[in-house]
Length: 269
Image (cartoon, rainbow, N blue to C red):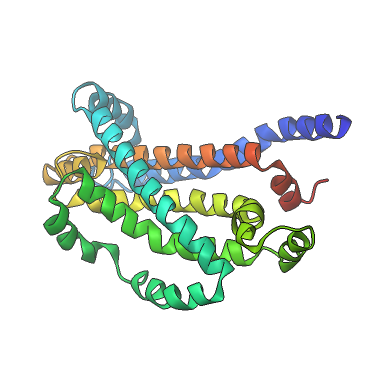
């Protein structure tokens, strides 16, 4: 208990320093932005003054309905991401566990993952029209093939000693996948999910730029059409904040679910 209390006290004492260090790059960007606008006199058409941004954000929420677009985008990201997780997790585990499965699916995974996701957009619109389902499929395609390979690496990293120990204790081979591989690889697989959700946000904007009438990506294209430059920057910041919040939630969940993995990664006992 004393060790845990000491670690918690140390974490709390370091939090202000970590916050300041994380906030410093944002401050630097704001200073450079202000200098370019007021010092170099860059036109507001290219770079709006920072002081107008709070009012712009307020109007976006109060008058322009950006909150609804954000909710629609969040819904699409979650559905596309969960679909990728549901299909990639068992396939990636099998590829990491079985050499024959890896040889069977590895080449096509490596082939498709190098195809740019935007090339699939015309086909997804043809197959699924231009509604939510099409956007979710684009997100799925953007995240799935990368996630499969990451989960395969996580499964392959499980030491063979774990399987041998389980067999020596009488575990049937058919149980090794769920009773040994899954628990041992889960912390690293969860980290793969955390990275994948970032890709999901990236491909959401790609999906919403074409054939959409709602969502943050659609809002950005609409703002570009009418040269609403402050709104474009504000929407970009909102996407960044949503992505950062998602990442923080995954990091907090990882610490709660896998405290032993956190201690091992930081070298603490």
